[in-house]
Amino acid sequence: MLQPDDLLAIPLWINGHAYLTMAPAFLDVRNPANGKILRRTPLCGADAARKAVAAAQDALVPWAAHDAARRTALFAALGDALAGYAGHFSRLIAEETGKDSDAAVAEVAAAVALLRTAVAGKASGVLGVIGDTAMPLLAALQLAVPALLAGAAVVIRPCPEAPSALFALAELTGRCGFPGGVFNILHGGEAAVEGLRAAGAVILF
Image (cartoon, rainbow, N blue to C red; front, side, top):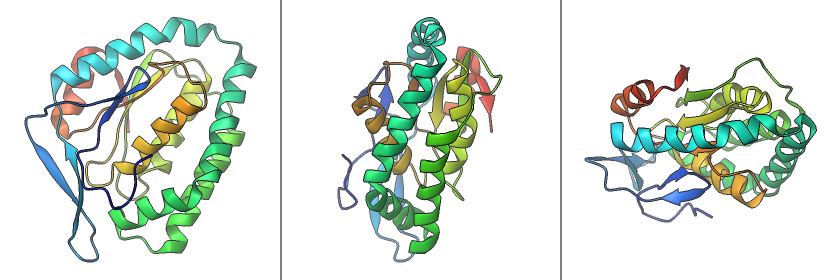
């Protein structure tokens, strides 16, 4: 799993696997408290977006056909796995956002509760979910999890300045038995968002 002291380019997560890409540019992810470069976010565009959306589209029909109780059980297992790594995730959030430790711990705890107790929404199809800096883990999950429980597949574009927690969660989906293509991570800025739109994803902010 991604470690806080690794200086690396954060991979994408497509079709259930880490996916390395030569992006046209990279953004330095810095600790706001001291300016230290922690890792780098690839600023992907249309090509990577198409790959991520294609993986989600391929996964959509079998995922939607899953028994709803099975989907709920997968998310409960993911919540349990996240709880087991709560300290790791809170450190990632704190160092990339400048949040104090208590706020980062609270965000992870809220994400665990969401994964364990969320109910299905009404969204369907392939959704592009746009993360933010204020809550780099929780905000995207608040949009993605009810949609996934309803049978949608998602491509999440994390905040480029704070991408690590969502990528680490994607790794946990693989460990918890999520089908490939259901939960995808695409890094980048506006070009990535426009690439998702062009590839047919419905964008959720």
